[in-house]
Length: 104
Image (tube, rainbow, N blue to C red):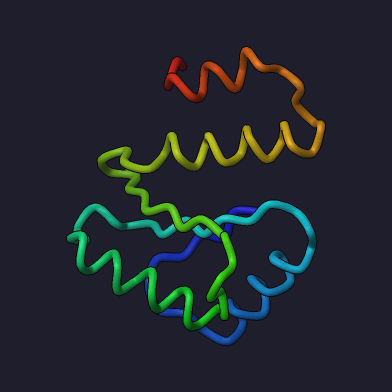
């Protein structure tokens, strides 16, 4: 699952995230509109996400991405491919190699 967010969180967001996280499937959080965030602001967002979703100690990646600049898009694609490989849906090491080297 890729949980996409872009700012303020609501209680429904937390419920949906908890359902996805409890599914046993790989989950990542993708924070959009991040092209204007500085490093210290990203850290604040990460801390807020960890607090709101009760992720202390969990290893759920948070990917900051921007549709405008393209930053973070390959990280999201890499997460998807690795998740599909782990689930046995995609067994192609060639595809994983292509994503690791950003060849598309």
